[in-house]
Image 1 (cartoon, rainbow, N blue to C red):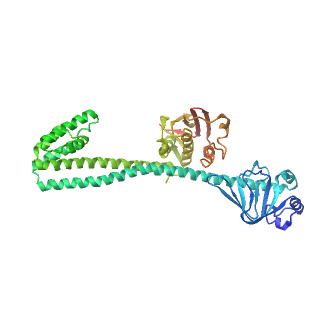
Image 2 (cartoon, rainbow, N blue to C red):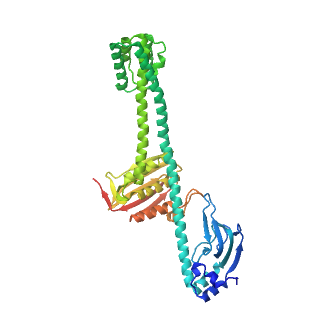
Length: 462
C-alpha cells in the first residue's frame, strides 16, 4: 500500500467525498510512482493497461504526427485509460513536465472497482465523456482551421493572378501614356491644319470603333503586307514597325491611305504613333477592367459564401451556394477537373444556415477533387424529390472500397496520410445535414462515387 492518506487522495476531485472503506479499497490496489521533470511514464504504442491519478506535478501527452498535438494533465486530475474505454494502446508519448507523484491503478481491476466504487466509476465515465468531447472540439477546430488555411491559400492564389495582371497592365499603361503624350507634343509642334487634324481623327475613330482585328493568321499576314506597302508608298521607310500594331488594332488599308494622303509627310509618323498609343491605351484599359472585375467577382463570391453581413438563417438557393463554393475552390479545379452541371430548371430554396451548407459542399467537393488527384470529372446535380431538395455530387475517382464505406462518416476516420486529414470533414458534414433535418448517403464504385444530400422544407421558385 503506498504512503498516501485518504485525505491526500480526497484532494483529487473525483475522490473528495467517497466513503473511507472505498478509498481504502482503492489505495490497497494502486502503485505509487515518482517522476523527475522530463521522465517518460508512457510511450505511444504501449498497452493501455492502467489509470493514472496525478497527486503532484504535471504530465504532458504528445501525440505523434505532423502537428504533434499536446495535452496537459495537472495535479488533481486522472489520466490514462478509464472504465468502459475501448482504447487498447496508448496513442501518445507521456512525460513529466515537472517533478510529479502518481498513483497507477491496473485496468484489469476495473470490473471490481465498478462493484466496490460505483460512484467513482460513474464520475470517471463522466470524465471520459468530457475528455472525448474536448478532444473532439479541438480536432474539429483544427479541421476548420486546416480547411480555412487551404481555402485562404487558394483564395490568395486566385486573387494574386488578376491583381498581378492589373499591376502589370498599369505599369504598361503608364509607359504608353508617355508615348501618347510625346506623339501629341510632336503633332503640336508641327501645327496641324484643320484638314490634317480631321483626317487623323477620322482614322483614329476607324481603328477604335471599326471592324474587329483579323484573327485568321494567313489573312492577317496579307493585310500586314498591304498596310506596310501603303506606308512605304507614303515615304515611311520603317513602316514594318507600325504594320503589325495597326493590324492588331483593326486598321484597314482604305482609311489609312486616306489619312496619309491628307497629312504632310513629317506629320504622318507622329500621327501613327498617336493612333497606336491610343488604341493600346484602350486595350490596356479593357485588360485592367477585366482584372479588377475578376477580383470584384471573387470578393463577391467570398462574401456570399460566408454570408457576411447577412442573417444566419434564411432561404438559401442551393445552386448559388454550390457555384460560390466552386469559385472558392477554383484553384484546385483548374488543375485538370472538368465540371458537369445538371441543375433543376428553377431555384430550390432551403431555409437554412447558408454558411454551414457551404461547408457541406466544400467538404464533399474537396474530397472528390482529392480522390481524383486533381484530374477527372466532377458531376453536380440538383433536383426536387417530394418536399426535399437533393444535391448530388459525384466524381470519376477510384471509388471508396466497400469495406470502409460504412465508416467514412465516423469521427476521426480518414484514408488520408498522417497530417493530411483529421477525419472530421465528413463527420462535420453529417452533423450539419442532420442539424437541417436532412440526410446524406453515398454510393460508390470505381469511376462513379456519388454523395446525395437531401434537405427538407424546400421551396421551388418559379
